[in-house]
Image: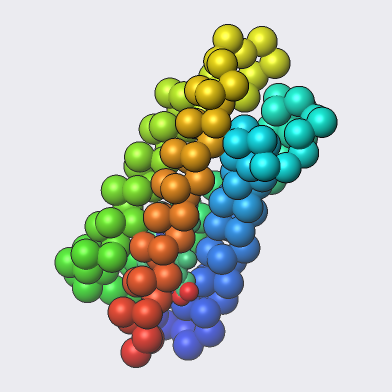
Length: 143
Ligand code: HEM
């Protein structure tokens, strides 16, 4: 990754496309769970339609993230921003696995208030991942 000048910006562009797909589609489902948008469409229908894009985004960030990390691992590991981002990413993925996927299924038993709660927590966690990522970018402007 450090051999070519163009490698880092090229990989970072793909990283950004990845998290826009992932966090953008996750936010759309969260807005629906919160009742803010798409109120006439069932949650499961929106989640099912968007799932291929969400998965593509996750795969892209999980491939490009470690590549970016590999350019200066010691510096990133020690950065609070990076640790905060990774902690929020782990929480966001765990919350989605335990709660998120249960409240957006067709036969969900979740009450509307639980759906709203799940949408809010998910939105806050993914926003923290993006904030942590941007904070890394700001910290390492030198690159
Ligand atoms: C959902 C998951 C992720 C999101 C939303 C995300 C978001 C971001 C954002 C917003 C940036 C800043 C881009 C900029 O404006 O300069 C960034 C940079 C970065 N991300 Fe991620 N990221 C994710 C996953 C990962 C993973 C899994 C890793 C590593 C294992 C990672 C490693 C990095 C690194 C090292 C940078 C810094 C690049 C620089 O120095 O500018 N990211 N990420």
